[in-house]
Image 1: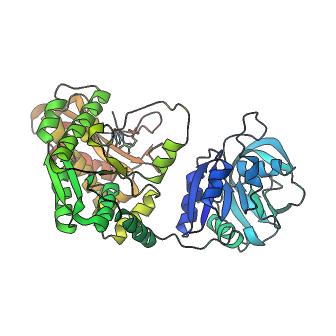
Image 2: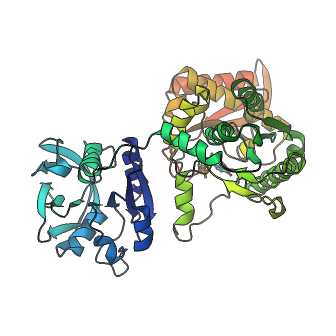
Length: 507
Ligand code: XMP
């Protein structure tokens, strides 16, 4: 299959370049900028893209790929920092300029190849400090903006292009057309990357493995798709286990059990460990300790299952492409804000090998596979949910009373968002509860009850988030329902802190 390789120079949009290209059915892969020439050759790319990045080509520690990468005689497109790198490398000049951020009007000077069919001018998204002052010999300007005279350049005989703007972001009009021109016309890549093709290839590959596979399922889309793919390949040699940890959303365990029982013919076991988890959580107030307790108990229950139902040779996991990249590329010592728990930490003596059928995929590709495999639509819509569940939405100790409030109030928030057509528009939505109380009045009686916090946020990747400006009428309806229907609640508040400085979950 034809492949485009994107060298990552650290732009926040690097992944987007790959995603845009995959959207028009060509496989694109992100690699660190300092990949060795030999490794790059092994990937056998049809073309190379240099991403943007925060550096300046003038800094002493500017990231630069190996020299031989430039001699590969492959079509090359540089975006933003990548553009400046090309200008610098081929003998042009890059100058420090005033920072330009936002949308500019790009005037097309030549509509051959790269800018073919985009029109006379388009709005293009800029985010850069340096800019090309003098272009290298053999190159010509094919597009300019008011402030960047060489916003798009080309050496058509070498098939090397540089653009100062970001075609991968939606704010650039015709950005996908520009990428298509490079990938399909300049590189001549064939559009062979389809999810139907991926399923066939994955099933064929998995069907060759021997031994049994153990898969923890949560009812979320990733683990469900993993289970279905493996089941298609090896049938009942796959065993799925779902653990009810007692801190799930209202009726979640029944819904997940129902889905696996009624929709899929997968070998599925539900372990009800709610009592043990809640017992272990008794008296625990510290958020990180709660995470640890849930994580450790999960591993214990999982190990027990593996021991009693094995032997297993493989452990299936729903790792996605961005996780693979994150762990492979050193991003420096990022501070641990919250420890996220997953299925790590299983004992070595289980001797499990890891099976990760989704490790090449982005989330939207997993959704497409789920659609093809006829996973109920309800599952696609479900908001992400943290591994430690409601234990991180209950501030202080997890008590049965607060757990009940959190479950029912969150259900009300979800129901009202769905009813008003907002559920799919927001990233996450729930009600949290702590130990703070406030006075209310019910009939003529004074009541001292819990305060519930509604949290609804918009986000694209959970790295940053903004509180959702919900209509006041909708908030009022949620509040009324919560104080009327949830025993022990007197006040309802709406959280209006964004991330940063807050986080999405309260703990
Ligand atoms: P924060 O609260 O850090 O959350 O802004 C970012 C995203 O991660 C989810 N989250 C978790 N997921 N285990 C998980 O699997 C965890 O411990 C955990 N903590 C937060 C959170 O729901 C949000 O989508």
